[in-house]
Amino acid sequence: MESQNPQTSENLDSNPTSPSPANLVHKVKSNLVFQSKWAELNGAMGDLGTYIPIVLALTLAKDLNLGTTLIFTGVYNMVTGVIYGVPMPVQPMKSIAAVAISDGLDFNIPEIMAAGICTGAILLVLGATGLMQLVYKLIPLSVVRGIQLSQGLAFAMTAVKYIRKVQDFSKSKSKEHRHWVGLDGLILAIVCACFIIVINGAGEERNERETGNVDDEERNMRSKRIKKTMANIPSAFIVFLLGVVLAFIRKPAVVKDIKFGPSPMEIVQFTSHAWKQGFIKGTIPQLPLSILNSVIAVCKLSSDLFPGKEFSATSVSITVGLMNLVGCWFGAMPCCHGAGGLAGQYKFGGRSGGCVAILGAAKMALGLVLGTSLVRILDWFPVGILGVLLLFAGLELAMTCRDMNSKGECFVMLICTAVSLVGSSAALGFVCGMVVHVLLKLRNYSSRDQSACTVFINGAP
Image 1: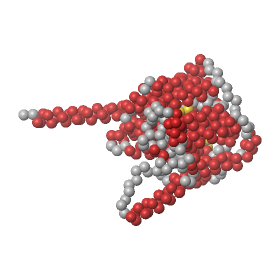
Image 2: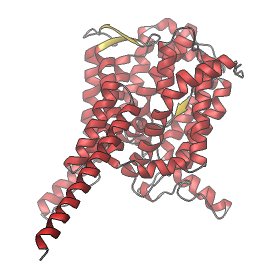
Image 3: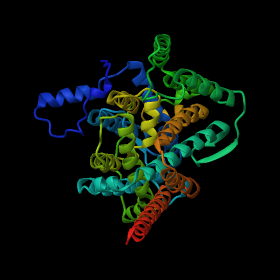
Image 4: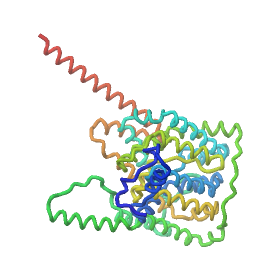
């Protein structure tokens, strides 16, 4: 199915009270309508630069059930695509994953899942009570942009690290510098990056000025036709397929390690120690990141990229909560939405819920057919190519911050960004950004009162 005007499609979140089942079915279909089949397929690749490294690291380091994770995250992708009608991403909870990889023997699968369940429960309560929507309304745009810019730059810096150095995902460490030549060399990554730039350019401009000159109009029409033709080339999908082919070339014997059929799905056994460690080490550092990047930043970014599609922080918070309250009991990786994933999928052409529905169906198929044995293939996937995909996702997210017009807004945004990056904490950056925003507001009010007082005194008889 294709649609020439994706912005007219409705989303279930914007109108939760559907008057009839027929209307509900119509909305579901409209949310899954493709603007362009190849563009949506290409957009589905935009989130893999974040998804694959973290899933691979947890599988290698902590024996995460990859098959179960693929099945559940596939379902999440399809459900969120139906609900929201935009390429709403499903990403790993990065802070919980970082603790699991860096911690020794004291933070394993039960602790990881306990952290995900506790985080999901808190987000569900915040959403259901309306507190999350209140927080969303109170946080100034400059602080949200600071969080987005810091996250985008963090993605870009991580991407450059993937491209330049050999990675040991099981220990979350960079090793020696990558060789220039080879099936995972620097030249391969540079060629893939150049290919994507030629095809996709710097991204789509949503506000292009029209000129009245006939020659200019003809030139613009030719330029638009060329851009449209180029946009139909699925650059990210081609690059990802190249990576899969190279994985088999690098290790042909990996075929022997493939076992067909889904992985056994079991309910995780929790102890009081697992709940305690999961909450202290996992939930507490993850919660600020989930609130700011998975809910607040996602809601703002979706309204920027898809005008007319406003998603409430309430619904986004509830969907993140429900995902983890369901999947983590069975050993599926704790998940959330993410502004970086949304920006990446948009960068590569994702415009509808059909984009993530495709990705979800692919994840489910892989989980059911290959299960955990898929990790053998991913382990030989060229990391430099993942870095290229992650680089463009990070840059797209960072570029959403270019609407800060006043010097005061830019000042708050950059303070928030700098502290978030240097302190490696979105929560610390958020607090500093809010403090600076309040101080600037108080300063402005003080200046106005002083000016009003001066005018009153000078004007008095």
